[in-house]
Image 1: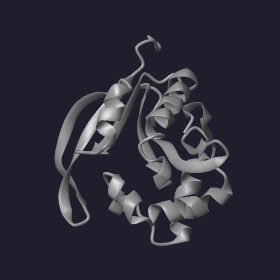
Image 2: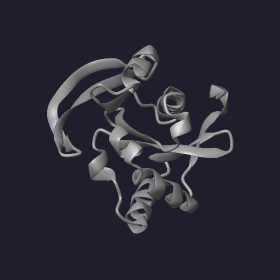
Image 3: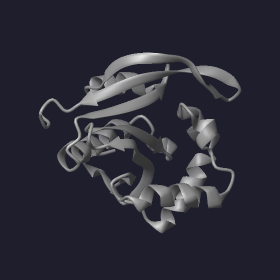
Length: 171
């Protein structure tokens, strides 16, 4: 995959089909720290989730690899006065997994730091995720672990907290 071909676009109504499929793949759900809470049982639930992200066009974006939808990335808990937000990401296409996350995060950081003037982005990843070393390489720092903070697939799991700070940002 050519990383320069990774880009973000605004959510569209047709994206609900991808979201529904991705949220209902066992592999996808196992990659999310809180996947069993997010997994949709119906296309209508996916439609409502997508609509809630699309209401504010600053919040959610489709990750594109060339011309193909590859995943979803969104801002949660956007606090512009504090210049921070949490970031959620769902990579739906298994063939791209492990290749596209860092580029998607970089594109979101460019947008959040450059357009929204944010100072901090926080990521929550399942402890032991294949993404942790990739995100460290990309400049994210580990801030801590929330021990047994959620139930995933019937077991208590830990969540790794990572952050990206805009060193050249406002203030």
